[in-house]
Amino acid sequence: MGRNTRKRRTSPATKAIAAAAALALGGGGLIWANFYASAHESHDDAWGGRTKAAGAQVATISCPDVGQKLTDVPGRARTEVDGELANLDRQITEAYQRLATTRDAQARDASFVQNSILGPLKDRRKVIFDRIRLEINRAGGTAPGDLDSLTSCTGSPAAGNQTNNGGGQQGGDQNDGGMNGGQQGGEGGQQGGGQQQNNGGQAGNGPSAADFVDITKVQANVPAKPRRMRNASTGTFTTRCGVNANGNHNTDNVIVAPGVTNGAHHLHDYVGNQKVNAFSSNDTFLQGGTSCQNKNDLSAYYWPVVRVQDGTQDFDQNADGGGKEGNVGRILVAKQAQIKYVGNPTSKVVAMPQFLRIITGDAKAFTNGTANANAHWSCTGFENKVQLTDKYPICPRGSDVVRTFAFQSCWDGQNIDSANHRTHVAFADASGRCQNGFKAIPQLTMRLVYSVPQPVVRNGQVKNAYAVDGFPEQLHKAVTDHDDFIAVTRNGLANKIANCLNSGRMC
Image (cartoon, rainbow, N blue to C red; front, side):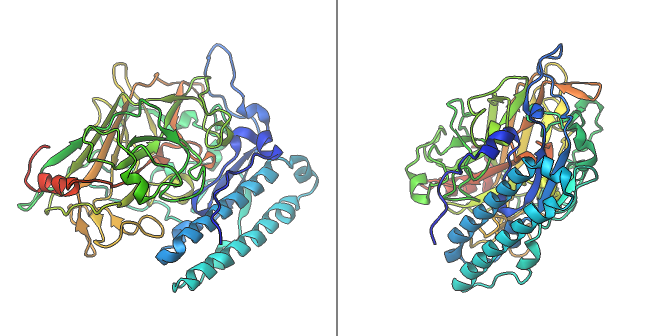
């Protein structure tokens, strides 16, 4: 079976719905169809770049997140299964396009959506599920017995809260190595639905005024760090890799969608390794060069760009993953990007294995629920007091917006990746200990600082909104922020990092 490496064609339906087209990783997601082209237009008035509510009716197609269910896929089958998950994504997009361009037919026939969109979609998904099952079984694995229960998608109006779509767990506690903002399981995963008649955003899919909060009015919520034990690894190792001033971008994601162009469906900043795209391999990583000052650090560090929606566009306004998929506005370059490895408060750490992949956060947390969410937003001068997971901060004058990531710091000791890209690594518990036989590894932390024009909320609208890139159906919610990492080092650097932390030095 061949890989699906061809770039997705732009059909007339895609052009008609431009900024609202959506794909969701893993064959699941909540698709929002905006029926008025005016929702995608900027509005010039006394507010300039104000993001205005889309006055259009909005409908959804909700499909279970199949990728998160596939936790036990044999290595020999993963390439083919990833390709089939990309096929599911394309099917959802085609169904979305039909939903968005058949409003008149839907108005005339109450059963049109079920008979002409959802029913055929279920049949096409069943074919893909059968191929996924075949690939897993052929490689000696056992496909989940309940796969067929995930074939059906549902359509609904936007009103009412959106709940779990079959992949994550709604709410759920998560420890993130002392960086938890105290609001996990809050509005970010539940907010949707009823407020989305006021989506706002230049592309009609967010953010809205409700996604912003004045940080000076938020109570302190940063928990105390775990107590250090006698055997703690107390050192730190900093690597300086720049802020992507050279504009190394793409909309691929080689971890979750290898070989699939535009597999992320949103734009990434890349620092560190300079040869990262859908078709990269471990061999190309070793030849990729690096933006890091330490030339032995060939690791790939990448995250979704942040844009300010001030009425302007950027280079990708007519591109897949950009304006065609609801990611609009001026891309902001971080003024600082601090990458640091820290130790474990209860034990020594082992070196990260070569080519270890880690994803932290969930790009679909708005529809999946917040079980895997790991977003942290704050402002300079407030970071030790307030960390937000489900809101973008409005910072006072003289203060900058800060995104912070604290990656999983426990490793299963065997695998550099897993079928759902999560189960091979884990967060430490509240005391800092790794559970289930996992080993403590250096914890990657990242701090990105942005000079952002101050958003102003007035009469339920927001001027100078900013937001992280994401899938259009996620409405650019703050809770969907995430970060990706591939460990690539040479000349013993991985061991040097571990030794630095274990010896308590600042390197």
